[in-house]
Image 1 (spheres, one colour):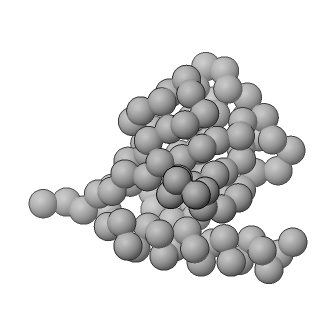
Image 2 (cartoon, helix red, strand yellow):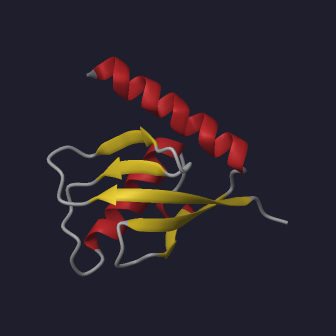
Amino acid sequence: MALSTRLAVRVQPGARREGLVGWLADGSLKLRVSAAPEDGRANRAIEALLATRLGLASGAVAVVRGATSRMKQVKIEGLDDVTVRGRIDAALAGDADGE
């Protein structure tokens, strides 16, 4: 059976800077993308951003729920929940060092 996990994401589309913001109190991940929420552009940007930060191919990350909402459910193939959270935590720590 292939590994996969789902991640709750809160998105800020149309942001000046793209990136992971942090974990929210409800356990979801907040992130920003510069793409406008039109014609699926923001969703594609979310998939690309998460794939890059998780070290995965772009096809391994897909928005599976909330296509027109700021709250989304993202499916990540090839990693378990613990690994996903660990890689996101590492990326968040790296982002904080860069600011």
